[in-house]
Length: 197
Image (cartoon, rainbow, N blue to C red; front, side):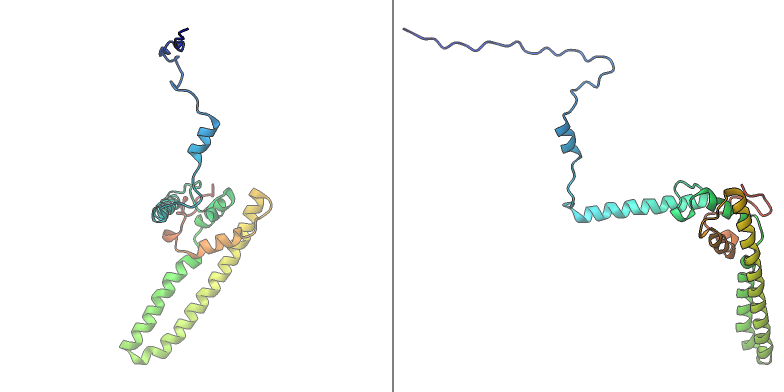
């Protein structure tokens, strides 16, 4: 009796069907494949490359924050400058002329004069030192009084608009008032005398 090997049944080759309109043209990946694609090692193999990428990312974030401080874009500003209350405090401070912002440049000029003039004329040294003390302490006293008035004004305006005054907002405004207007960050968004937004 002779046995012949039976041939396996032939299956017809799958015909490529045209993709349905709106389909992605490939099968959806399994969950296992998707998780494997997302999986990253906890410790990167190339540490130098990872440090370089981190530095680039941090540098980009700093540049964006600096640009936001210049343009007034609150979404990208550092956290200490964000929020409607802080924006309002900045506007209240920027809308008025603050004594401290004018006093510090004037005090610097007086100090330079007090250092240079005695070298030119020795007889004026005692007079200059006495005048310098009067100008400096008088200016500081006026700055303190102006800061006290600003503090009261900020508290009243914040309570009127937002209710309870958050801790640190008044100090934020006073520190801004001490800075020279053109060097303030975030940049002033309103002019002197203009009503806060």
